[in-house]
Each structure stands twice: as C-alpha cells, then as structure tokens.
Amino acid sequence: MTVDGFLYCVMVGCGEAYFGAFAVALGLGEILAGLITSVPLVVGGMLQLITPRMVRVLGSLRRWVVLCATVQALSFFPLAAAAWRGAIPAWALYAVVSVYWMVNYAQGPAWNTWVATLVPPRVRAKYFAQRTRVVQVGTVIGLVGAGLALQAAKRDPSSAHGVDVFAALFVGAGVSRLIASRCLAAQREPEPIPADFRVVSARQFVARWRHGHDVRLLGYMLAVQTCVQISGPFFTPFMLVRLELDYLSYMVLIAASFLARSLVLPSIGRLAHAKGPRIVLIIGGIGLVPAAALWAASDNFWYLLCVQLMTGALWACYEIATFLLLFETIPAAERTSVLSLFNFCNSIAIVTGSFVGASLLWVLGDSVVAYHILFLASSGMRLLTLPLLLLQRVPRYAATAVPMQPLTVRPGMGAIDRPLVAGIEHEEARGETNGELVGAAVGASAGGQAEPLERGG
Image (cartoon, rainbow, N blue to C red; front, top):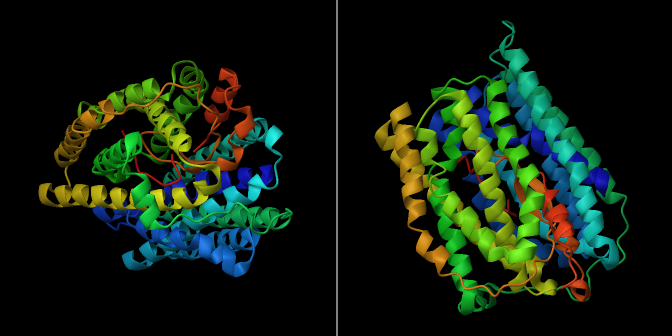
C-alpha cells in the first residue's frame, strides 16, 4: 500500500502536474491551456457518481480500483505519442485528460472504503501519517525531476522547446502507475463489499445539507471554489507565456508553495486540535482573499516566490479546516457516497469559475494587463465570500486527524489532497487525539481536496 502511494505520487509529480505546461508547449493557446486543468473535471465528477453501482456490479472494491488504476496508467501513452510527434488536436488532448480524471475520481471513494478493511482501526492514524510522509518524497521526485529534465531540454537546440521530453515524462508516469496497479492487485480483500457500505442518494444528500451549519459550510466552500477558479487555471499560461519563465523557475514556484504547506501543516494541525477548526478556517479564508491580487502587484520572480510561500501556508489552513469540518458532519459508513456527491458539486463549481475566467480573458485579450485584471477580479469575488465564512457556527471540539494523499500539484498552493477517510481515527478513540498526531496526519500530505483544483494564488 505504501509503495502504491509512492508511485502514484511520482505519477502526479512528473505527469499530471505538467498537463497545463504541455498544452502551452504545444501552442494550443493560453485559454485552452488553462481550461485543460478544469473542464475535464466535470466528466470525472460525473463518472464517480456511478462508482458505488460499479462496485456492486463487479462484486469487488479491489477489481474496480485496479481497473481504474490500469486505465489511468494507459491514458499517459497517447499523450506520450503526441509529445513525440509534437502535435495533438485540442479535442483529443481534452478527451485523453478527461479519461485520466474520470478514472482518478472514480477509484478514490472505492479505494478509501477498501483500505479501511485492510488496516486495523487501532493503527490507522499512525500508519497513514507515516505513509503520507513517504509519498511526499514521490511527489518531490516527480515534480523536481520533470522540471529539471524540461529545463535541460529547452537549452538543447535539437529539442523542440522540450516538447519531446514530455514523451519521456508521460511514459515514466504511465509506467509508475502500472506498477502501482500491480501493487493494488497484490493486496488482499477481506470484504469485497463491506457490510456497512451505504449509498446516499442525491435527494438524501440535498436534504442533509438543508439544515444547521452543514448548508452554510457547503455553500461557502462552493462559493470559494467558484471564485478561485476565475483565475486559478490560468496561472500556468501566465507564468510560461506572459512572464516567459523557464521550466526551472516554474518548477521552483510550484515547489515553494508545496514546501511551505508541508512545513506549516503540523503546526496548523496542533492549532486545530487546541482551538478547533473554525479559527483555522477563518485564518485561511480571510488570508486567501487577496492572494490572487498579489500576483498583479509585481512580476519579479523573488516577489512571486514569497507570494507562493505565503499562499501555500494559507491554502493549508483552508483545506485542513474544511476537511475536518466536513468529516465531523458525515457518518463513517456514508463518507464514500457523500464525498462522491460533494465532489460532483465541487467539479461544477470549478468549471463554472474557470469559464467565467476564460470569458474575461477572451474579452480582455491575452496580455499581462488582462491577466492582472483577472487576478484582481478573482480576489474581488473572494471578498464576497467573507459573509458566508463569518456565518459559520461550528461547535468547538478537538479535531480528529485526517490524513491525506496527494491528488495533484498546482501553482499557488503546491498540493491538492485526497482525504483518506480510512485513516481517520477510530470513533472509539475520538477525544483522545494528540495535537501532535493531528499535525502529523494532516501535515504529512503531499499533494486538496478530493477534487483537483487549479489554485494559483
């Protein structure tokens, strides 16, 4: 299980993290290059809704997870072929990336349910905290290795601006995921379908969020998501096209927010345990309002590096708090189903925001000033979410550890995590969580939420 997570993160670091850069290198245009990180997510969000049904059809969680992991690995090879040729139609690139996200989304809920039957409750929190420390290394190896390879190729006159190097990166990512799928297949399955595996319908899901602080939390998260996506998908084309950064600088900016996040997460976890997640949410929610606008203040690399370090820490606050508050409201037996429905709503918010941003960029034109206006607009819209943030009325409690696994890496916040519901501390142990353990479990993440988000700034 640990090797599988490590190889998965290698795939994320050297493959998925560079989808936007690959689109830029192919010359598909800045708007299309930005939307490649958001539009395919709707397809993925829709497919994951059928995951519970497919698990029942196959009669096995493991079969479904292994099937999804294998298809995900194979999706990299058409991309490698396109990189070798140096060209691919935009519709084909979107189709392949959509397949990637379809199976990536679809396997998550089933995997979480499956591993809960493999790891004994008494050791889950500590095991997953240690596991996520290991998989962090995989993300770093993939991310930094790919950045250095692309930078070296760009300096080589015989290389077409590094486009051909993407072929090797995507093959490496695909092979890593194939080996990981074999690791998945080698694990046992004591309960093909756990007895407490419950499916929550869309109607039940909507009814559940109508009352109390649940609906306010959901509304706030979706509003933030929409506002963030106005600018988020376009940080990669802004950096590579408008600022003309090389791949090394691009990689450093991504890694900066990743490292900042990793360094502050243990402290944030202890704060959440001592003061409750609401104060952490307020810190992150308020701090993220001006984050996008800061990109419009200066194009100096060292200034942007400082912005990345700050926003990586703020995103850590926001995501830890929202994870903790979500899990406090979802029964353990229904988390897989409820998270699938929530992720679908989130994917709609992501695409809505990205289309608003794309429309603004299309109207304003592809200039540095247009991007600056886009960043200011994103921060302006985030300001409107503050009333929803301040309306949150959450009882104070000692937060339970929520370990996470990297889902992807993005400019501005470094890592986007998938919560490992199987690693949540056993219900009998609640109230006994040590603050250091909370920090270790949530702080050992390497890559938001159970949904991919292009969150630069």
